[in-house]
Length: 474
Image (spheres, rainbow, N blue to C red):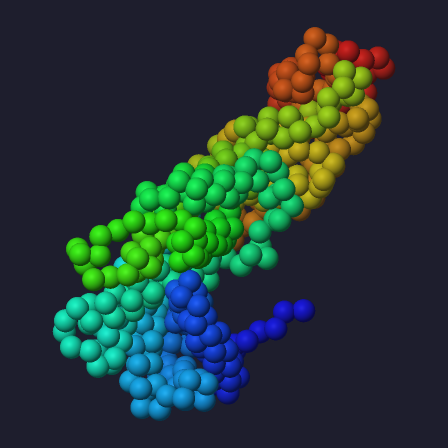
């Protein structure tokens, strides 16, 4: 059972949910600051920003006031602050406001191209939001514009920038519940995850500033083979792990404090923030490519007008049909009678409408008993399996009669549209797959279709069932 925290037209529910979520994560963040290795984690700003982007109706002044009150309440009750709680938490609200304003107005609906664009917008949104937050936060700490200010500004900026850059992709990706978890048990999906763990271990053993970048190849590997939600989660966990390893001295990062008066932890935060964005972009790019390939495949396998299988789609489906030389395949080939006259008298739009209606009637008759394909122009092909001649003829006649039973409506006129059909039935002779069998049967059905045309149209050939036809076509 899923609990919905927000509702578009329920202010009280939204305000209560925002207050409790903000208060809870402020409380968690305040206690995580005690050990230095967890001082990175002030998750509330990125979390609230992500919720507002996912629920645009929360992006209003009242919501920001509720969050601000919750932050001040937390600092006053649990930290003993008073006036400092008011001034400092303006920095947190600034971060949320800037990040949401940059993301919410331009967030595009899910598609192959929009995912790339949305991911690329996360970086500048986090950057500008962290700049605004750090500037106010350092000033609110009442430090002069000197080395202390630079240090405070660096702590604020690196904390907000790195945290948001790791958390927002997780929050803005599609929910983890949509991921087929069983597919992740495949060795091809587990290997990149193993590579991340090994690279972190090797980095900790070798040390040095370059050790931070050791997981990047494995992370990019994850981005290529894993879904975006999983990749975003792996990036978050990898960044957290590296910061903890550095803080404990397990991963030894050497630096020169004389260049800039910033802590090693600040340097690590900035390095992790830079590392995390590149695999994310690879992830959304690969997802876009996969979606594009899927669309191209669907476009190639289905006829745009009738939504039936195209010729290539027919042969693709034949590959999935269990093959046996003893199984019989049957082909019904249909051609619309005097279709050119329909186009000439009523226009090509009317002709397209006739083809759409014919496709619907054929599909209604065949249902799931066979494969229906628009073979080209006004020609349609139906392929069935394990039919005898009598069953194939009955199916063809049902299709033909569905054309003449009800007239077609063309530009305010009712018009009778008929079709000629040709049949062919047989099994494998020298073929080892259905592709060859069906090609041969289509050729034979086309010849019988010509007989129907020559003998007056609106009929099915052969009209009678042959007495003996096992390995040959009708």
